[in-house]
Length: 327
Image (cartoon, rainbow, N blue to C red; front, side, top):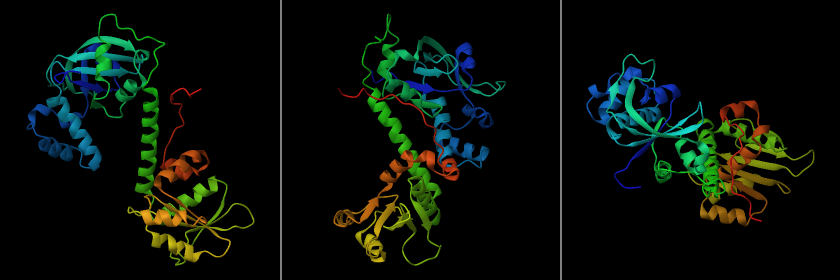
């Protein structure tokens, strides 16, 4: 795509407004007429914090960015890609008007005029392109697949159904990695110390182990005791929610609490230092699990977790496309 051509993706809950009114629009009515603000992100941020004082830091940055982008970064002549839900079409248009504040609009008061160029079924696009414009953001730059959307505007465009979609594999990988990132972030954010121990004990129960969480304040260094069945071996579990990588000495403390015949399990949300990994390799009776491996187990046994933790990490099982297996 040529450097001067820019493309944006946008979502809405009011498909009819966009398609019938020939506009793109965003909400934030309480922000008022954005053109009355100084043309700086700081001015937008100050107004946003004043209007929405209870907003979290992350949502402030996201909201301010979209409002400023809608007014100043999107230019007349830029391309817009809008996936409509009512008909599952991909609508491609060009911005034709500058920003305007429409005070009598029901919800979407920040508006810009647009001329729709083409309306195409989603089946005309690769999975990667569909994934990009399916962004969770309301307004965003289309950076990865702009050429594909521009190609769709060409006269006589028709995607060949037999054409192999090479974006399927990477798209599936992106979805999976995004889910793993979400799970690890939620565990790190909501579960610290004793709460993480309770979560790990519940995960082990979901995996078929009988578990007992050690009393709080104990100095044994053992957080959870687990058995696969009524008989030994006993598995002693230590859980760490710290951000830094686990050192060899920390794992040695678990080894020191173990009796003959015991097995050890060390779980961290981070990772292990080089020496700690070497120690684990040389000590087969202790298994180390890092944050990435913990997430893998959470996804595998998610349905068997207690309702409390499934509410904390809300996931929905869906089917995603994957590349055809090699014959």
